[in-house]
Length: 129
Image (cartoon, rainbow, N blue to C red; front, side, top):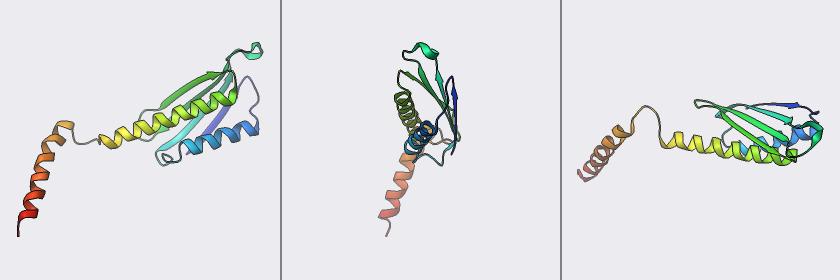
C-alpha cells in the first residue's frame, strides 16, 4: 500500500505526515492487500482568512474496483484528516464486502437456479447407503 501525501498553501510537517500515515494504516489494515495506492491532498482553502477551510481529500485506488474519493473540510486540520480517513475506510470496507457477497462470473439469476440443484444433490448423496 503506497501512501502519497501533499499539502497546498502550507508546509507539511513531519508530525502531520506521521498522523496521516498512522490513521491510514489503522483504517486500511484489513484491506491493505486490496488497496494499491492512497493519495492525500491537504489544502488551506481560504488561506489566512480563517474559517472552515482546512480540506483533506483522499483518493483510494482499490484493485478491481473504482477509486474511492473522499473530501472533508473543517476548521481544524486534524479533524478533517480523521473524518476523511474514517469515511474512506468505511467506504472501502463496504465496497469490498459487496464484492464478496456478489462474486463476478455467475449472474444472480444463474446462482438462484443452481442453489436448489446443489442442495438436492447434497441431500441425495447423504441418503445413499
